[in-house]
Length: 318
Ligand SMILES: C[S@@+](CC[C@H](N)C(=O)[O-])C[C@H]1O[C@@H](n2cnc3c(N)ncnc32)[C@H](O)[C@@H]1O
Image (tube, rainbow, N blue to C red):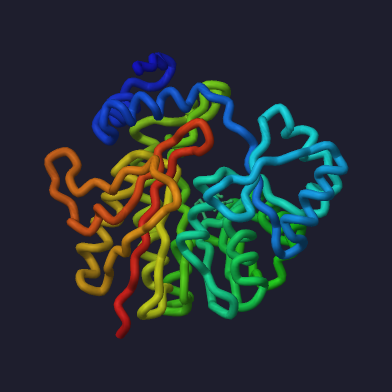
């Protein structure tokens, strides 16, 4: 299947050609033209799936369970408005979130009682999910650098009933220096060029994309990943993710870290409950990258999900 999408910048189309094999590239481009269903996650800090479904049923809303992810449900996009007008929505009984985004906390696997950091957190979809996985037990620090987004994050944490979060309006690049070796698990859902979320229905989604933007993001990501690494306890894990396809924002960021810290870092295998994925690249342009990078995963965008990149890195125990 060939999909023409001439509105996209030619440099982006060239990049996609180099990162994805032809069939995956065509499917990714085709997915940008689709109206994806609305997906939500039951907020187990406030309710159970059974209670929520009963309540939605009384509003004539009948979501379908996502078979491979417990607590996730989908609805045709036409039902989004009705869903957001329910009392259950106002009371924070669920959170609307893309499925690929839900997989990041699922892979991080935070446990009740742990000390966890979300280093680039607004609007808080993943922070609230982490708190739910931790059953509101332990300590969750959430950091956001952009003021209006920070306030949105705080509002979402309150609305979703998160009681274990300490919120910090600050540049995440300073955290490693201020809080060395402090956390059991860190999520770095890095600010990125958002290439894997382009939508033909929303031309704004790619309006600010440029090779320069990718470079700017890449510089910031290097600083954030170094900070996250410094804040990890020995033996702890960092999940690095973006919604970008660019190796400059993904493999090259991690290649630099792996070479800098040597045996201190090991990439862990990631097993996802989906098949529409591709392993991380171990070669880019003429450069051979760290061989462990094949353990990173690119989720390919499709009719349900946005694209995503995930890598799980463990710091050696001292
Ligand atoms: C990909 S978004 C995070 C989405 C969030 N994890 C969620 O699931 O709702 C990245 C966030 O990083 C923030 N950010 C950008 N630069 C930052 C920095 N230097 N330190 C901390 N946060 C930063 C952005 O404002 C943005 O809110």
